[in-house]
Image 1 (tube, rainbow, N blue to C red):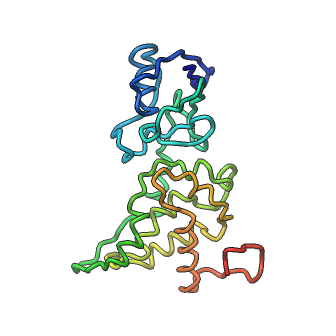
Image 2: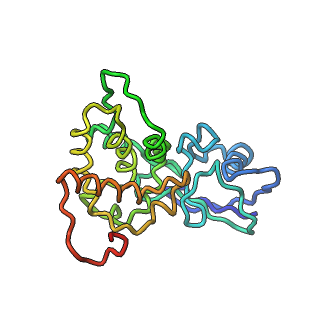
Length: 231
């Protein structure tokens, strides 16, 4: 198998690799680094689809390298995911995500009391809790390809659970954070939901956040328009 890797910032390098025994794309990357080129840079930690650090593009599609099988093709192209500053080869800078979480104070402010959580709320928030901050959804969001006031699906996905979790004692603050992230700017193109490796459907969480803000009088929904999913 011919494997082409975008060795940012200099070149695309070709490797002739025997992929036999490689269960995942991450296994293939390790084989290249351990047997062919020890200078190849990529990230991985858990190998179980939990840490989100091994996100790359395979033939133009963003994936978690540990969670996808090696394609049965004669040649493949592996690149760093888009939308982030590339440090080296397949390694991108994720600090922007963490800084935005701090800037918008997206965390649980626990109640002083032991508040029970119903199964219905638990089911409603699981998608937000399961986000692994891989950044893939932001990398495919068309609004984030240029400067925009839109906060992006990563932050809005992470914020969703705190808006509906009864254990959060300061729901007004998190609603203010969500309002600042401008969920109403979302075009609902579904790119984030189609690409999410954990199938968390970020677009549906953003749509629900718009509804919560509207109910609280924090967001004025436009009348009419061409959003055929808004009825």
